[in-house]
Figure 1 (cartoon, rainbow, N blue to C red):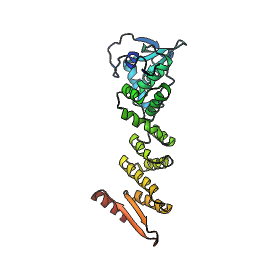
Figure 2: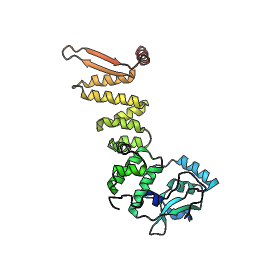
Figure 3: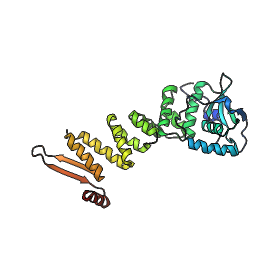
Figure 4: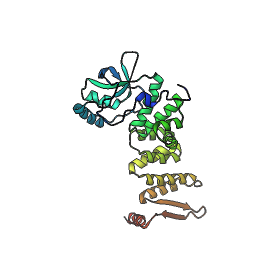
Length: 282
């Protein structure tokens, strides 16, 4: 595969012009293969499959059969490797189907890997984590640029860059993102924190069920606490606890000589002010 054209023959020629709907229009070149002769792509970017969704699709396949052909490549062992359609393949097995319709395409092992990654990114609802890992693999293992990926997926280069930035997060935060415990927009907010602080803040976000806006405020408070000139650790802790209790930005400032200081509570509107007052009175 040349650096000039990393996708080789391209998605259109290898995958064919097949839409994602379950069209009943016959597709030229389709053949039926025993389902046991087909093996999955070992480089499938999706790490998790929704079992309930596959079970629902299996019920549909029992009634209608597989309308959209799987895309496969013949291997040297007499079997066929999936390029596209693992979800349908899994559902067909669950439905007890003996054969499935396929379209065979010629592709080298390297082209197949790239196609499997790009096709899944383009057509499947991957988790943000799986999508970012797949994009990174295309760049590191196959020499694609962010522009190549953006063009193949029909996305802007900026969206590809933003997706890849997620991989800078703490590995434990990435695991929360992969499991769906943390939303992509929320995880992206944590990128401005030091790596060592990201996981603890993420845990607080999940525990309190914070929105993206609330997470932004928490990250801002945390960052400000880090930059204040050597505040006493107990004061910083009290400041954070009070901010969490009141649901508002709180600043505690101490006078160096007298030991006193002032407490500043910031509110955005009268409704939030009333909420703060009610919480103080409670």
